[in-house]
Length: 476
Image 1: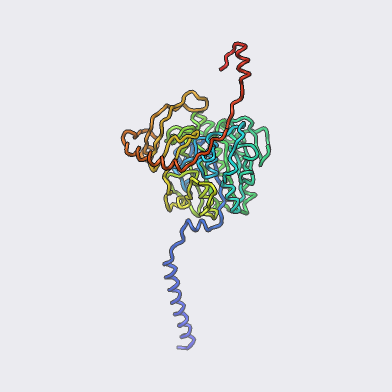
Image 2: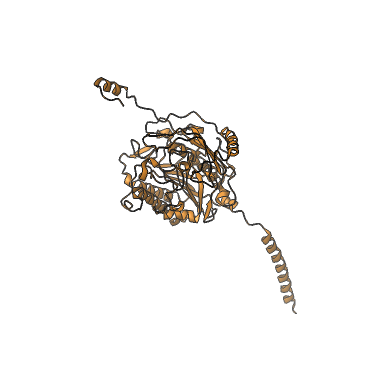
């Protein structure tokens, strides 16, 4: 055998020896944690799509059979669907405050809805998701409904957003205009085209900011009444005008996702679709459906605050997940910051949510399992785990714009077994009532409420009343 062959054979043996060692080490090395990989990856873009007054039963993925929502359903199929996701409030402004700050709205005195005559808005001391993400290098934009104060100091650009286009409050209020940034862009708003207009603005924002991380908050005014759909969708659904509006919202979601794909952004963008509260049942067929849930907007039954929530982000979220554990809008703030590269972000204000990155990945359950149901500055119910206690309610009847709800004493429900809150367990499980009340007292003490902001003031009509009295006319 020649010396060259012997030498080659020796080198081959040595190479195979070290290759074997390398392979054994590689096989023993643990696989990278999917959550850590997602956090270390390039900062994801974030698109948060919020409908207004859309119910739990208005989406195909949540049981609707008379409304077509293929694009939203696809997000659920390709991502994760939460079946027990809660908004901070059963009405608009407090929910939006809680969403953007990660805090119970009572902490900032936002207990009700802002109106065009409101002189108050989100306090300057609050830190919004947009402000925090800007510190991480994000471009931030909101298209749609703001509803956290319309005077200049309360508008989006003064609260962390680089760009704003939309109606500053609900579309049924006086003085509906389109604002662009801090100024009125249009005094005449054709609401038939609002969803389409918002979609175009959202697409333009994505196109303009595609070269760097961005946060887009697309807050639709629909399906809040009055309802409007464009000619392409009017009369097309099986559920009348309300269904037409939802199907156009679904189209909008599809257009946003299409834009992300066209720009090769869909694999590095977290896309979320949800609603600010339940359906406005006071307007019957124009008000949406709570599906299997009880009641809707303006109540603290499940239909008021449990809403659809689907999320899509391929690097983190495994397709086809369904999560039935409690989660809340408060969780979005710390989760977005975690994905943006700040898993240990410390807010100057106490947060009420938690980072659910691991939950989205299907790797863990949310640590906290308690939730306070606030409405009009009052805690009307409390959930811990599968159990919910609902405190006495005096009822309402004949209030314009509010669905009649019968009075009730303290109620107890096992939401896992009774999602529709049909079977009161108060007398059956007195020990559970005692346990919940004890936990409630502790949990409530952790949430300090600020003085309620003045959000609406009645006009002084005394001159009209005196005139009617002089003329012998009715004064009511």
